[in-house]
Image 1 (cartoon, rainbow, N blue to C red):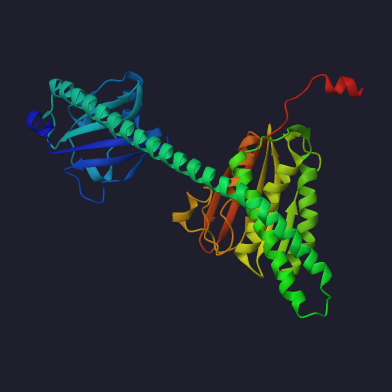
Image 2 (cartoon, rainbow, N blue to C red):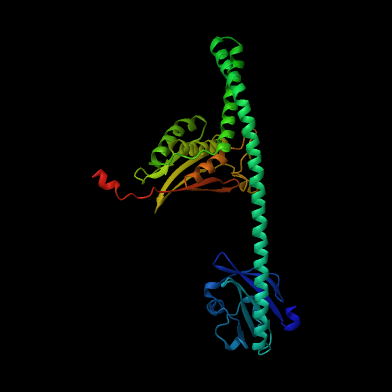
Length: 372
């Protein structure tokens, strides 16, 4: 439609990407290698001028205007118009219209391009709004599905718990009464181990369903991590794994539930150990940064496939042959109940890193006076 109003030789739509670059998202009259090219707009004089004025710029002859910076894909441009794409007064990009002859474009053409840019910006806004609504709807459907699934699982787990407890007690008596040299001892011990596993699964399901709130008190995250490190320092080498840790003993206190936070790191390290197998390495690191503490659990295992990374914290999602897929869901639940965040970085064949950020405890100005 624009070309019916202004007979141009080339035209393009540039959009801001990651607050640093402009990307040519759509174009006509340019070679294919130019489309999707990135440009550093911090050095783009015309972009900065459009951003400050929110208005179109008309250049009758690019060879006589120092503001126009010739680039490899547009060396033949002689007459140029640029108009900003504005969303809520924020410049998200711009539209350009070019002619290969000087003076071929006019100030009136600039007004037309400005009106066209407004329509493009509105179209982009509508598309983004639709995408947000679609994502929100998908999230709501997913939450409702998981909530229903969780409630059903919790009901089943609750109903199973009492009869299984009776069986578990009976098996414990059986193991205790059978002599160690009795051939039946091995089978009874296997039954006991599996009953304990079922009990853990039921506890995990009920934990997720009930979502218990933590008992937050000011405490030392270092103490929790040191306890975990001491445990895994002994146990991981027995599995043929190397364990390293680097902790900050004088870190300020955070608000924490000692048992729940301990469960977080026990789960993450245990998961890493299962994933990497003998010969692998696990690193537990703690860093204090401003008003927060950053803890990473990193391994050099096979990594998590990209298609699974977005689902890794969902309840009941697992790629293991054993397990319920609740461990990382519980970890995320606990971290968020501590007003923290957990993120995942993973690269196939390189390894996986879980990054947890927890805020320091609020400073109490009376605490030092009381201690004094």
